Length: 261
Image (cartoon, rainbow, N blue to C red; front, side, top):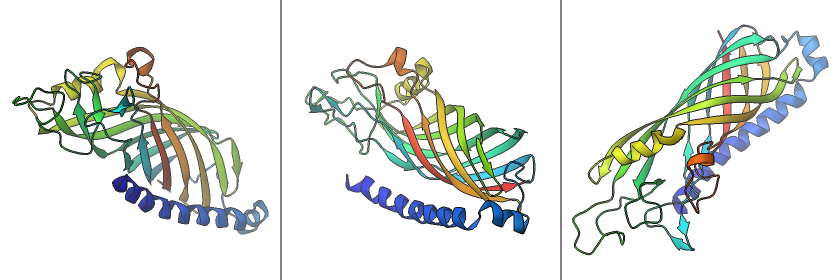
């Protein structure tokens, strides 16, 4: 818990500062003030194309930590990562935006071997597990496969700003995330099982739901906050017995800045 607690505190402080800034901006930039200063309508966003930079803590649900009230060897708690993303936005209409973005993060995964509760399942791990695993016979030369996985989430979606004011807009978004995972062997014999698990049964493709709030206080510049979630759709047909439906869910709080092109 100590490792993730430090990451959590490091992420919460800048998020809290951002929320204070956003609240102050919302108060200062009322519709009457915007009309007096000539601030452009947020619906126009001063252009058709925009480039967005975002980052924030991402929680990845791991529902395979325990089996029959016993700890699964090598399976760690749900990871908390910082996910930076670069996104292009295209205005299709006054209330519809098409988005395409690419992010990157790193996480280690363990391939559970025969004798474990879910053989072949790839689970998040925070330590290098070797041949001393209780899943192997004493004196065995076998090793569990552990890989560092580079995750490149490619997201495509639509945003719908429902409520729009001269310096403020908010609304939902929907999309699809392609979770490209590139494993690099840390210990063991092969990354093949970890790659097959992530790319098999459609686990690499997850629908996304999000809600964003943006403030437009300067010409060509927007900033805001977004909450988004990736949904593990593949668990409907490929979930493991005894593993909760939310295994593999992604939940992220993002802060972002947007530049009009």
